[in-house]
Image (cartoon, rainbow, N blue to C red; front, side, top):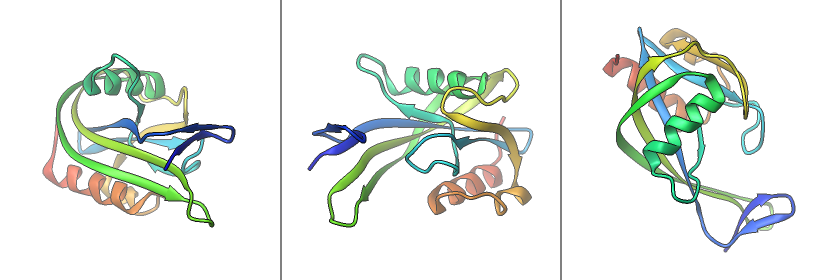
Length: 148
């Protein structure tokens, strides 16, 4: 099976990605995706791991590109296979998503790169956002556990 990289590009393998899970002052850092997959959905900042880049390097780069914030990766706490198929059963996307717990270091959240919005979100506001169920569950769990 193959993963579509875009409408005209297909990858023969799953794509490694990373998402930064950052809590600051009882708020979690989220972005609204500006591109597919899940355009318009709220998620953690992150993206593809580039060739020669570690997951921690990738998560730092992606957070800065998408939000202007700098973070310090602490640990990978969950890995999730996200596989989406089209109506005929062909794989549209297959991402191996590494959820990375990070500490906030500096910067103010602002949308850039692949994000149409970026902000720090408190627990009561999570319910109002359009999110993948696992992302919502993870955000709520992070907020309940606390953070930096």
